[in-house]
Image (cartoon, rainbow, N blue to C red; front, side, top):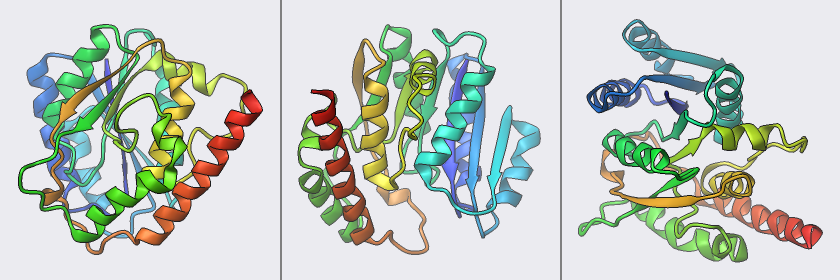
Length: 249
């Protein structure tokens, strides 16, 4: 079973197209699947779009009235999968963004890597020849690794900022049942992705990467995410992970 998990907030213009593409890709792939969406306090028409697609997909929607952030949203979805799966060593969780910047067609390669023996698979972004990423995003892409510093360099993959990933469910189960009361990830955006990878990698025997082509040109956002809060989060993660490393030693 493939469990596709999607945190979404105010993506009424993209979530419907994304869900339909996921349905086509996985049906052609010939695997059983379900979609779990965490509606993180959307204030636009996202809930109505999700309601229209529910009859046509094996989909469950969790709704939060107030935003909790993608890290908390993903952890809630992971908890739901872990509590319901019958085959944690076989089942796969895929995480992707709701804004169409991740291509659902790449789900196949991520899942095949898990089926081939990997416990965590990360989509390594292959840059396009003509990069039409918005200017503020390009600046952020260069600054974030610098601010994260050792936290970025010590992550077990070449691109720990990538959020398009696949996990064997047993890895999530071990992390969530480890006895540590702290959330797997608390920060938003890139910083939260690094937190999540650090939290889960210790429970994985084999981690791989597959190449994916990002599609920032398809993003439909009303306004860009402010860069300064993202950098603040990254610096906080750098400090917390460095402190954790000192404690472990």
